[in-house]
Image (tube, rainbow over the protein chains, first blue to last red):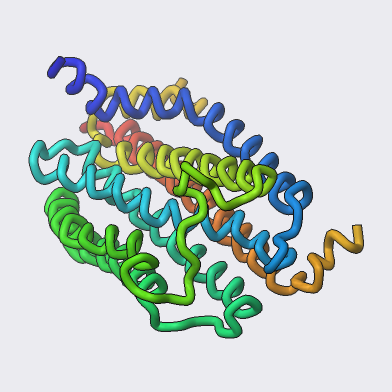
Length: 250
Length: 56
């Protein structure tokens, strides 16, 4: 069991597996994105209260979901970094942070643009919006802290500590619409007993959530492969790989 | 088609959102691609330097 874990935590095995999966992941993401966008923008009926403005949901909810999902992935990587000092986890943590920040930024911006016609304001300092903004600053802080320390492995450990401290913000974001009164609407999707959303609206939304998740996986894969090459640049498998790619060394 | 683009009067909000969304996602993909290519190029250069060095 430990040998198995060790094999798949090895940089070389991850690199090879990830490079092999990459084209499939990209293709799957493209199909899901196309399907989700057609379903959400064209096929879903307009909302009876919000008209067509509700269609921003197909960007807003998936990116907000990803802002939390990426953070939880980073928390897992941070824990693994600190406890087992696995290099692959350090790389996953470091390379996830800019992607998480981008999703968080998109969630905030689309929410703001949606808020203007529906609430009459771009921004309110309520619990949901403020805690999501804090999440964006947390991502920036993790990136900056990692970058400020010259030693790569030390930087990753410092970033891991900050990541784990920031985890307290995640349940606050999630439950903020229930704990405090807010302009932000309550959950519609996670009420599985009685979903308060039309199926033709719900299916494209779920497709977009999956599409954003595979988008993250594809982008993270490429970034991690770059990170692995930098970490393991002296390894013979890396040298063989680079020689195999460039024709003048073939 | 015109009706679709008009988004029931919310065209500015909806299409601005999707424009920014395309921009952000595009930058993520481009950044990832560039990181991978840069790492491979740097290694290739490193390796070429080693091969040229007779003492290596």
